[in-house]
Length: 256
Image (cartoon, rainbow, N blue to C red; front, side):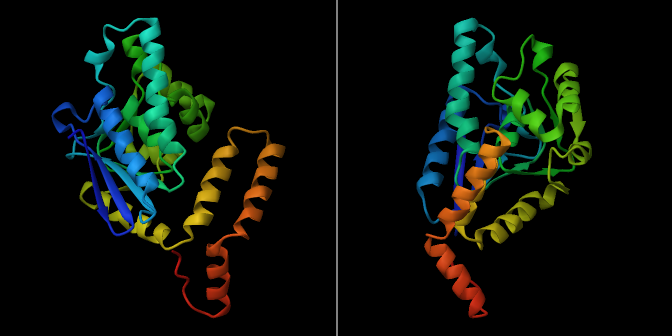
């Protein structure tokens, strides 16, 4: 299996499972990940998803170059478009928080997948980069846009045009990852954060994810109006009733 989904209570861990290929993404792997992501999206019992790579060397070392080598213009466009729809945009648009546990190399499509996630934790040995220009390509799975949003235009262009890698520590300094931990503690730390998130209102979190994402797609005025709309919508939810009742009754909320 190119990906493995494990569910423990309200937290799921999705593992990219091609360790012999450093978890490189090919069409089959992208489709396998999409199927599991669709399952997570529909399962109301799952509140947080963690995505990681098999082994200790790589999260995803990039796209499968053998699959790219013989493509021409139309095939390249189709590859990027389908990949964005099935995986990268699909992850970003998930109504549940997705945490990337970057456990080694995150290069090319691997970094693009990590950037599609809402939160990124990295192991100390992680290396991150977009080496596509060394192959005569550019990032095609959203990397030019998401990297710029996360680290700014100058640093994004430095990474993209140099095809270089940065360390996990540099990535944290640049704002590309949220936290760096020892390799052996990576999943434990990611699960601890997931558990904290899972205790909050899932309906409010879904509204927050949609509102934040909308801020990158709208003008500031439109985004602020969108926030007002989603803020108002929260008042019509069972989670709002439970959250406010719990506060007034001085107890912990129990969101369903």
